[in-house]
Image (cartoon, rainbow, N blue to C red; front, top):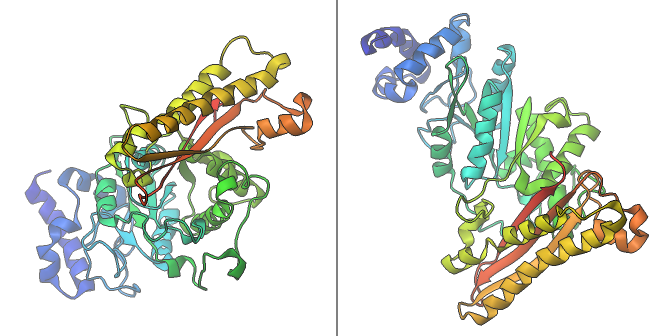
Length: 431
């Protein structure tokens, strides 16, 4: 269709929209922001052909001002919330549960599947990998951006955690997937709530002072990352429970880098019988995004790294890969599984400890400290080394494989910002 033809088709839509805003000249002037490109618009017209016009536009009784740009997304046109942190965002930004649920209700009426990617912002290619997975498998995709205070201890980096909403939206707007039918799927909406919206009755980071409903997943939260961050998974389980209730995803996507989080959340979905996502199998774990040159696991906190500490950071992956190579040697049997566990851990830990000694000698003042490297059962997260020491070889089950994971702290200078590095590899099983 020609541009002139598209213009003729869009005039009724523009007139309806201008009646909502009370300023036809303003809407006409921003019509390039109201509509997607001609080819996408043709697809949208076909998709909305059977939907009454009143359902394609926000009603006049909408709770927020319509003095914001519109975006032709999904079967309905919904504006960003009036307090959107990014004016004229190419993707609608909802900051309230009420605004989001209005959109979700329409998606349900239209029988569209919704994929969900929960983030804390400061997006990188690892996040976009999750978004692409959702675009491939769902009609619509929702991304949340919320720095959750409940998963930070009072001594951790909540205040300094990178907040880059404008660039995050730009990155999300650049991602698309062309379906088998030729449809270009893009992120449909973002949910960017305030702390008050997510914790309407108030919140404190001091667990002993907290009042109200919080969620814990017992037996899966104290080991691995939980050993150093004892309240972390309580905060994760609480905020993800809230997000699942709000977003109502048919599918959710998380990264393997945070593998313990994925195990915890799958158990949460199963034990509390969530309707959205409807089963643990609908919580998809996507392989860790890595730097193509040195395999450093992508992380928002990598922004803290100085050039010198960035050169050191890939040591954790090298250590885990060394341990994986030992674990996969062909001489291991059930009879020598004790030695297998010990050799795997010793070889991995040695790589980090050796690098830490080099850092002390090279004069660059990079500080590297190993927090832990452990082998854990893929389902129970039981620490295999501890079980071996406490209960003996008969109590250790390596038949289902193991998670080899680790964490290290790196900084530069006496008062340099400390970056926590985490990573893991799957030994003999798939998620």
